[in-house]
Image 1 (cartoon, rainbow, N blue to C red):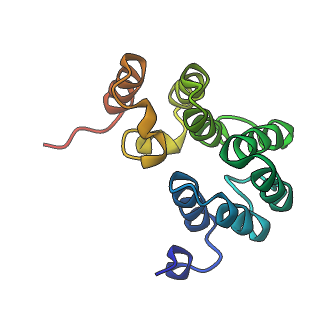
Image 2: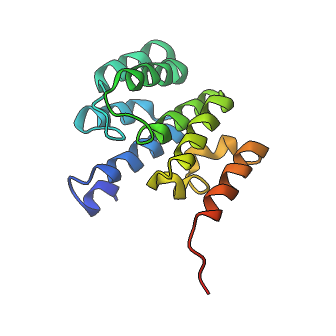
Amino acid sequence: LDVRSLRPGHEESGNILIGSYESLGRFDEAAALIKQQKCWGMALDGGSLERAFQRGGREKYLRERVAQMENAVTPPPATSFAFAICYAHLGEFDKALDHLDHMVTQRAGGSVFIGIDPSLAPLHGLPRFEAIIKRVAAHQPQTV
């Protein structure tokens, strides 16, 4: 089942699928989807991402994606999650955590997904990541 079929035209469904493809190392499929839709609200060049992957694999793809996102007109905190995912996959944990910290500080809506998004799995167990998760939980309404 293609997650986009649940609600055609819903960009977030595509974002979930892009993230899933990237987590699975299927960067060519992620790039193909980015050719069809915005990625985290940003119009990225899927063709350039595809060529970067063909030239240098995972790392070239992720570096190209970061470069494109840096030139996008969509400001943080909306893009912070996307940056955090890329930096987490690149092993640049401090940069990833800086973006997540910014999201939480700005109370961005996507903050509630930080602890469960599998794309951020490389950060699990890091003390700074766990502290960010606690900050998010502190902002959640408590149920009785």
